[in-house]
Length: 588
Image (cartoon, rainbow, N blue to C red; front, side):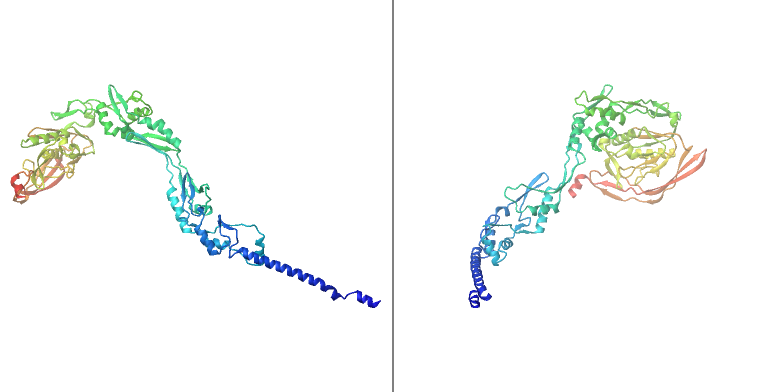
């Protein structure tokens, strides 16, 4: 029946109403539950940072950012401040992290630890997450400080490569061991330090990057050469024999002339035999061991040059012979093993009976004698100068020097104090009187016709010498020199007595004769009278000053072929009286 279908079948609207009510009730229940969880989560979360949050073991859970930053500052882990152990090459050290600009930014770390969101889903989610959170500290980095710290490490640990070597010093072999060069890579080192901070307690040292430069010569080669050559070389003296004569060369002398070279990675030694031969510690005893040839002594008989006493052979050790004898001994040990003969060669004198004609020393070219008042100092000084000059052999083109031949006029050279002209006055000084020798040589040179190179006259005239044809010398200031331009050797013969000195030139004449033509004295000037002082003062008589000329005239077959004019200016010789020394001292 229609009515019953109507009563039994509800309308669609009435049929849905119970389900909607049920869903609404369920949703409300969930919302209430979620709200409760959210509230619970907020309560559990605290102010900013969730409970159970830690930074390197420091608990900052439930704190605000400020509180967390304060705790991290107060309870900072030791690793944040502990020195960072580092290794640079084969060396170890530590780096203060703060000084190197490496620190923890506690404020930023607290910010990082704070809850990232307060939305319900995040807050409720935390209620069901594990109870602890580990937060990595936020690092602060001061690049300038890090660079400075790394630069300091480089300064302390960098080293330049050093090559190995061996040298000889004071008779000892001294080795310099090679050292590997090392240079810190500062850019990479800064990054390595930054990555290593903070270092865990007990962590291994951080190895900083370095570049290495190996020496070219390994230590093994240095030690090999030291043991096999250098130490034996100066282990004792070497002894050379020539006949029954012996010469000992000390380790110090040997070492002075040994040098070591690196020949493509292998050390070798070089003995400078030339320098060893010149060394006074070798040359002096070697001269006694061998002996130079003795030259013949020449004289003149009937206008011809003759041998007055024959020379004799000498024995010489050459630099090569010396080196050949010494080198094999340097690697040996013991006196007997370090002894060997040295080869000598015979040397002939230049002058002998058989060589005179070949050399062209056949005639007396000139001779000149100067007389002087006898005085002990003149006898000594002029005699010594004659001894040193006698026998001089001047080769063609060679320049002969008075100062070089005679040497400095000192007591060690055999000279004594005597009277000479200094600053326009007679004074007592070593070598006084040698001007007589210089004047004699000058005149022998003048009449031999050879070329003058340097000469000077006295400042005022001395009566016993020919005016305009005399000479004086002063060590280091004025010399007497001539050049042998004859084309043949010249032999100088000199002899002296207690009142005269004679010098002769022997050789081959370039001109038949050489004459001196003196001019008149002009520009006469008068002396004055003055008083000298001091122990070196020597009284002197007055003499006028003047100018004069002397012509040197060269002739062949009686005909003049050349003429040279020499001009000389003499100052007045003042009259000097000497104040007694005691009076002079009292006046001062």
